[in-house]
Amino acid sequence: MLRTIGLMSGTSLDGVDAAWVETDGEAIGRLGPVLTLPYDPALRRDLRQLLDRAPAMSPEDPFLLDCVARLTDRHVEAVRAIGWPADVIGFHGQTILHRPARPGMNAAGFTWQVGDAQRLARETGMTVAYDFRSADVAAGGQGAPLVPVVHAAMARDLPKPLAVLNLGGVANVTWIGADGSLVAFDTGPANGPLDDWLRLHTGEAFDRDGKLALAGQVDGGVMAHMLDHPWLLAPPPKSLDRLDFHRALRDAGAGALSPADGAATLVAFAAVCVAAAARHFPESPVQWLVAGGGRRNPAMMRALNAALAEPVRAVEVAGWNGDALEAQAFGVLAARTWRGLPLTFPGTTGCPQPLPGGRLVGSLL
Image 1 (tube, rainbow, N blue to C red):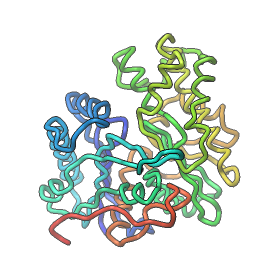
Image 2: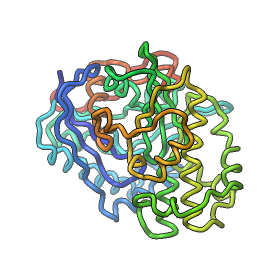
Image 3: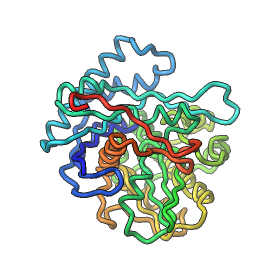
């Protein structure tokens, strides 16, 4: 087996998660240390600016290059803080633009993750696997989600069918059948719009303990408008950019809501989107396991339990680490890249056949 360190910087823009994993890309052996290194407020602010400016930004833009250097340095610090040796690092980087091909689009899809893999390899002395999404998007896939094959490996001994829901800035789900078949896609917004709402109306980074959402009332008019969004009506496979629903929220009149009612409505909308997504499963899961920051929001978990017929539980009931799961997954994906194994599948991204992906850089190659 390979010793790997997975690194993930998600759409919440709060920091880099790191995890040490022993794996051959198919089975998972030892799970080692995990940690999160927060971004400083200035980097977090600048990354949010990158998201806004990315559609018109040149890869040589000085502001972008400065952000990439600082982002990469934080990843170097995370690898050093893990402190365990590794054969390969799985470096996702930071997604600043994700526009995969969709029905009616004439142009090819596009996905952009920033981060300097060569710098990371040079500073750590380790081989780095990176650029995990581009090959899938180039082949007509959605480029996301990438983690389903890892969910399947971790859930090998759990009752099936099973749904694994990740609540990050965007929510994505993996349905795993008893025969190992996979269906996976983004379900809709999750923490991203809620965090942005809190930042705008309260100055807080997120809704701690779901208190604001629990104090509010769901606005039926805004909900109805949002549920007419064409993206929600499209069948999977499909993937979402963190900012895809911001204009729709504005057009729905969400800006007129009180802070509490806006938070309650965004939480309810996320849960209803998950329930709607379940219609695309071949059969109902026996349970939902929830990972990501959203599982710590009591308002979100209450809304999911109300919207779904099956039990909804945090992934910790299965012995998983819900904060480290995505970082651990990129350790596994790094091993799959090393071995040339597929990362994406027709049932997860809509690619035409199982596709390998990722690139390798480093002195050990």
